[in-house]
Length: 554
Ligand code: ADP
Image (cartoon, rainbow, N blue to C red; front, side):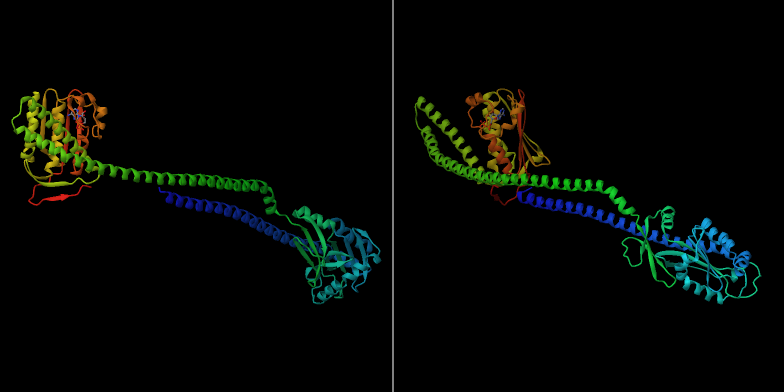
């Protein structure tokens, strides 16, 4: 990954991290919002349920009072005791006491057919009529409604002949559940349809009533609020018969949602803090990591720049060196050829034995020097990329035999057997760089003969799937396995004592491998210490053709 790529990756990672943190915060905020919304919804629903419950309870209480009151007003006995001369004792026991003790009513009053107040009791105790005057006045509209309804009745007894109505009334700074019922005979004992006495019984919407709401419905802190007062929580409007609000029942709402949130809030707060802390830690540690990576990248970029500069300098130096070597070798080779040529000419003349011996030493030294120069020149050319492979049509085995011949003689001089074999498939015309093949094969044969003290030097050429294969095997000292890798290094000689004995520069095998690779082939070695070595190289098998082509070395 380059420094630019790693910076792009970091930017992407940063964005992903930011997105992750935003998503986490969004999820947390969403969770809190949902919880609050849910709590409010639950509380609203509970408040509505409470309102319905309270409203129904008020209605049910009035219904109950209707049943209570009519249980004593639709009765023959009640009719006879109240329509003739009023039996007050009877009225007290059967209306006042009865409604108060058994039904919990607060006030009971009795009006006669003319609308005059005849009896009054509070909490089951008979009261002077003057005490009930205010209450009676407040009942006037109610009584007139009863009378009006009574006017439409034709039945003379029983439920059909009875008029009972219920309503809420404000009187004496209080609100009352009130039921008014005409006294009606159960049987047909009524003689005329004149207005009947009316029993009115009332229950105050007071402490008892509120306590019942609390006890029966679980309404918290119920209270009565004036019609003109504002109520913040849930409430039920108490309305008179005309629909006007005369007061309100209010209470402290049950808030199960808010209660639940209060319960879980500390744990949730801790969780939220933990998430925020984790996000912060993550951001801080990732930012630090990014900072370190950036510093590292900057360092890497610097190192890379230094290395590139060093490589460029080394390459330039190497090219300069190769160029220098090539020039120097070339310059030395020319006079050396002159020396060798003159030595050759001198050898043709008449010389004393000592002089001839000395001339031979000059010639051998010159030849060795020339070989070294050629090796150095080749290597310099290869390194400078200037060595060209020039293919031509080469006939096998003739070409190989020509290379082998000098070494056959040298082997014979050392008492070595020299074998050469070419497979029939390899016989023919091939496009090869004859000079370079000869150079490689010659080097391998030279080494084989040079390093083998006794035994055989065997050369073989054959055709394989890879191409044309050339192998030189000997029964020489062999090469230690751990040194084989060094063989192809430049100026590499395994044993300096043999070098002193046989000469050489340690460049031969390195040049061989470079040449074989330039010819698109491969050079390998197999060797066993004390048993001998085998060098094999293969080259692409391109059948010979008349035209010649040259390719610049890569
Ligand atoms: P040189 O010109 O010194 O022979 P080479 O590159 O041809 O250089 O060989 C490098 C070294 O590899 C030799 O000095 C020798 O130690 C070892 N070597 C090469 N060929 C053989 C062989 N056939 N048997 C044993 N050792 C060999």
